[in-house]
Amino acid sequence: MKVFMTGGSGYVGRATIEALVRRGIEVAALVRSDAADRVVTGLGASAVRGELTDVAVLREAARGADGVLHLGQHAGADAAEVDRAAAEAMQDGAGARPYVHTGGVWVYGDTAGVADEDAPLNPPRLTAWRLANERRVLARTATGERPVVVMPGLVYGRSAGLIEMFYAAPGREAGAVPVVGDGSNHWSLVHVEDLAELYVLALAAPAGSVYAGVSDRNPTALQVSEALSRAMGRPGAIRRLTMDEATKEMGPIAEAFALDQRFTGARARGQLGWNPVRLDPLTELAAAR
Image 1 (cartoon, rainbow, N blue to C red):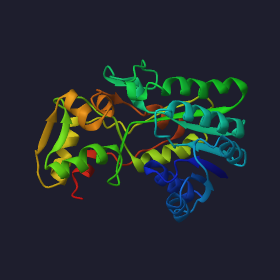
Image 2: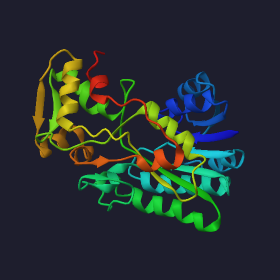
Image 3: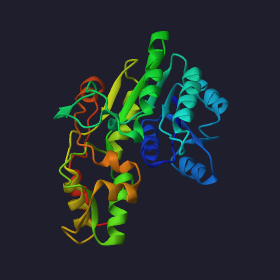
């Protein structure tokens, strides 16, 4: 089997290449720089030179693969348009072969208790554009294609990702880890290596499926910040931010970090046999780094 993927040199993409290669799957990954080329080839994938805006490259690479994983994201005000055109090109190339698209549970907004993929949608401004793109992707089920959407929770592990970027690293610099508001809101977490396994399994999912990529671990934001404070050797060193302060410091992503979300990944476990094994995020995040 050969899989074409975008975002292969990124945080989740690197773990996903590793998961694919372990299964003996041939991987071709989109790269836009020599540095990204070195990353993906070092992991055992071949490099396809191009960007998410190169729709002809995407279409041909997808046409030559047995399945497609779209993990890449364009940075910029035109992210929605680029993502839509990239998805269309790859779905055109993939035809009736599997196409797995990346969403995110933030589009659901606050949840009332523990929610699943059928919860009402109420996205923060940061991710509102995803809704129309995901509907377009899934609509192609009607024409005999095989789209699937994976919606990761907040990804942690390997001392990288958004928690590292917006909480751990600023915490080390300031001597105290930020938390938005009182931190009583919940985050739905997933370890990057568990999420990578879900992407692999999603290649065999029924057409039109949507899966929340979460490990059923939903600590509060304050618990996460407290764990990070222990990791830097200053237990309890927390810096509380109002929403205005958080937005000024973090940007629009602060609104997403303030969401109160609890999700279950039961659908992926039941339908795909997904079995997350990294189930103690607070202990892992509290480990010295």
